Image (tube, rainbow, N blue to C red):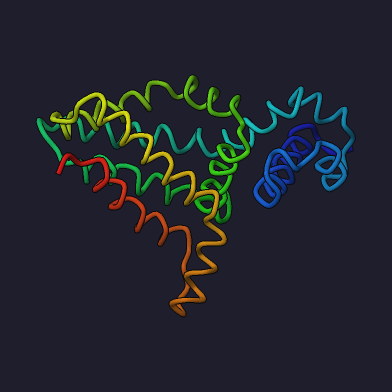
Length: 208
């Protein structure tokens, strides 16, 4: 019998691949246990239910991403002033570093987060916003400091437009990269998508 830690990692690895390919709603625990060659009791023992398993899959990335973003933003806020570009630049290296967490980690994370919104996984959004509230608030306050002329109404809409752009790009990242590769005859990877996305988001949040 495999050690419990190995069984847990196997379940996470298989669940991650299936969630990324088919989405959270269309991936059943039966499918996961069948592909992982474990019984349902193992999933229940390690995770309790599917919602907890979904959170655990994402949290392998978030546990690396969020502290890294916090470090970047804390350093940025040692300056008296900074631009919106610099706020969003704080996301670039932490996102790229997810490839060190898992093979092709940046692309997988983007796809999984996109799935979390398009599959209407409300519990996942609650989990991220509550567990990493400090980092999210720091990001928001950094945006306000970079563009103090933004009204509350402008901030509301621009944040939601930014989120919508991210969700669409993340949820469609695989299809978009394949389309771009076909159209422009050059390889596109998650790093390329992040590099294109960050300045676009920064421009959209700026007051000018």
